[in-house]
Image (cartoon, rainbow, N blue to C red; front, side):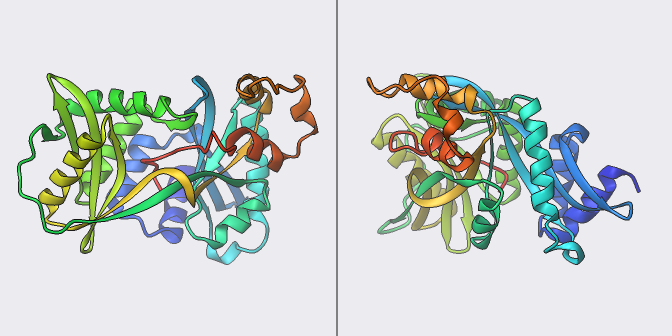
Length: 308
């Protein structure tokens, strides 16, 4: 069994993903050079994927890494293998000049586990629930269901909106296409609001039991956002809608700064007359670097549409 097949086997053992998702991930996203593994007696017992991303950091594009698919075989847990593999990852990412590493803990107890490896909460969100008085009627003027040939325009629009935020995870077009199809595979749909040929809003929606979950909603105006929500609620015949929006009221992701020298100059420029000496970051701990550079009052990082 080759390395990729061993990782797939371990993935099946540790996660509850569908075979369809596993097939698509390992055929479209997986790259041998991005996989990091640890072996015991010649068998892969711990693995993770170091997926290259870009973050928009105060208007600048900075390389970053999404640590994804972290898993340890049940028979080999509580031996420190995950921590050991993360330490190896940090060395590799430093050599690759990645600005930071980020991840999304699958369970609440994992926040404390990852904190032991230097991660801290850095990407929050605000969860909002909307209760509509009745299921809206369809169609809604200006709203269209996204078709295959609309994907590049939706990606362009969302990228522009993400870049308007102080700190945000960006998606490449292939990555966005993967997520778009993953939403569809989960029974969801995507919608756009278009006026005079220009996209002014994008929404992705997935039905979850009797509710509707929106993994992404961006709109130029409140009216456009309301129109998109109305259209999605109508399409799925749902009255209760859950949204994950920018904010810091709920924890979502964690990060660890890998190369503070890449981030510090841009952060320092935003200190409104209180800039610090160029090498100040060297005196900060790994946690302090992350808290200061990513999770300040103005720069609560935003990420959405992740494969979590």
